View 1: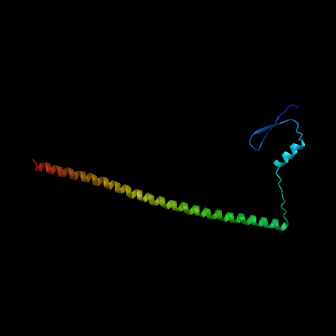
View 2: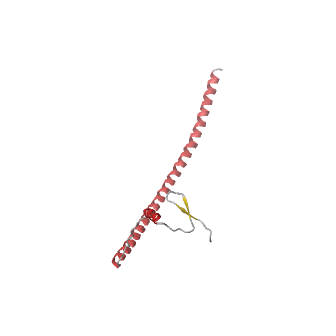
View 3: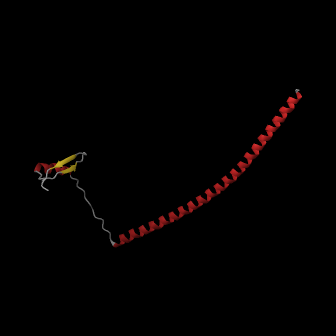
Length: 127
């Protein structure tokens, strides 16, 4: 592994090739320090009381979530029942519409028969 190459992604989105050994000079250290972020991390300490409160709140939240889920199931069931009622109404309307379509067709045929009869009577009168 004597010859290897390391490519590092720069902040500007380009790639920079690093030599095999990096020995920063004092000038480079000053420049590099401006790029470093100083992030202070504080540790959260929980005593037993805070931990119990967090756990009880967690379980209360799960209970609330379960209550909401049950309500949603109830609403979904009611929705499905209403959709079933709408399907029944639509079925009744389609039956009535088909019945009226048949009657309309029969009335149109009867009208055509009367039109033919009137035309026949008019043609007989003209003879």
